[in-house]
Image (cartoon, rainbow, N blue to C red; front, side):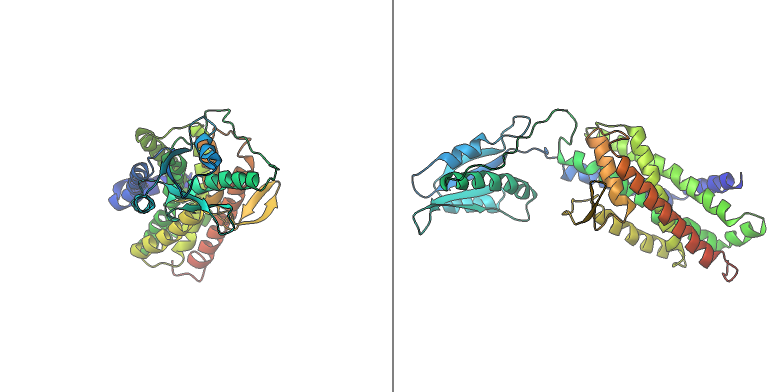
Length: 370
């Protein structure tokens, strides 16, 4: 009962404090809008591709590029054969085209292929993977080598991201949930500054009741955050394929770790400003390493039960990002995210326990000044 009263008190403080309310809701909504504006391009793009042929020769490569298709039948490349190499490089620099393929003859008289593109351009990064496959098949044919492995992709279900915003929208949920870290640090830090914790302890409220109440309040906030981000993403064109209820459960599991980290942050701050600064730093580190803002290269350390475990999988948010993508983008159910959800719950529980232990030891122990 006392925990519920503490939870009610915390929620009322959030509602009455514009800074806290903005931290909880407005900042994630701003990033949702930025993601919708910046990642509005279709996920499967037909890339404008120019091909410069130095001399007449085998047109097999050009035809192979034109024949390349996505699983849904759309062409991967819009191929145009050009004769002005300087104009092609200018078009490439101005990003009028995704890539430039230069077909010529090497010093040994054999055909040579050179692919030009901007390595920092996201579309070239994705197109270059397909280009490499097509050029490799072309090289194998010229060398008289047979194809050892042939991959056929088919899209059997409508699930999956339809544009770049679909891919990144779940990451905005992770970002919103991790904002609980500075919020928790600010709320608890304020209680320390006001001396509320001392009065609560004298009134008979135990440490676990206080922390349970704060945790319940933040988990209620987490539900609201998931709903608000989800609804705003839908309004901006997000294509949902999964269960919102399951996404809420994933969000609740992530929020538990955020509360624990918020308690740890509280042990190293003295005022509200420090709580926001340090808490936001911890938040942003996890946002980036979880892949919420942009995908990271696979950094697999080992494999567990058939699942690759990466370097940053020590953070619950990393598993949460993958789970939310599987649920909302791919339509996965509880069975499909079972491993990731179990990892989130385990890591979040350990993080929360560490937060409770640290806070109790440093801020509510006998030697503390609370």
